[in-house]
Image (cartoon, rainbow, N blue to C red; front, side):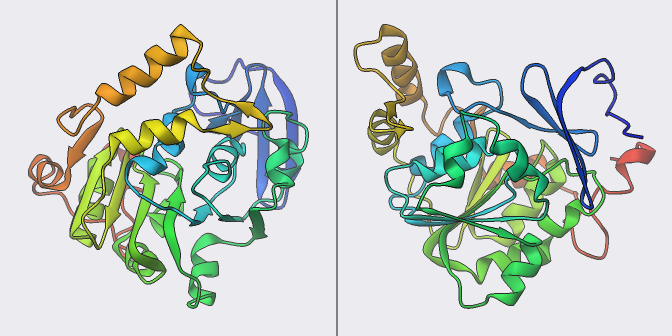
Length: 290
């Protein structure tokens, strides 16, 4: 029996995949649930941003040349499709623990081509275990649209120890970019683990080096985006130009989008960093303690 997170019980499913890793379902509007919890949507268009797809599109905002990228988790494939088609990206290595997501992606025209993209290598494994077993691999960016911070085992991808492991796999000026699911404790942990960083929407972007925020470069990258042979932004479209203009107008003073680590640390003062031993919010959340 599959139990859905509250508020989702009335959804009708178009796809159900069950394997040893659990149950994946997709509802009528393309929303994906992993073991009953929201796990993204099938959507790669920034003009129809129902799934926060602006976040993978923003990779070139804070890294000048993300040539080699590691992504932990595949889910709907929407993030993978966007990152793989970033014109600066030469290779995208994806580590996913549940092969059921590939079954779903094969049936979704918007993302299916990512499985055939020569830039992309998909590995079936646990992300943390794979990193531990491959100390020789290094990346310009490690990206994870990490699941809810209060889910079982979430600390494996949010803890101080995991961030230290990720640091060992970064090239010079490399970044880690991952979902905090709006947890102040996750955000504080990131800012204590790295000397440089900021919250971007609900993600943290952190690095051993100063982060190269460049809004001009970001716009140029967006204007050159092509997925499945189709330009994602039409210079002749007034709505597309308005969207790009609005993004270009954003800067680091826009705290609803970007909040530097000094401000994050001040806001979360007194919070305890997530470690492997204290398990973050995995058990405290359900008791109303966080």
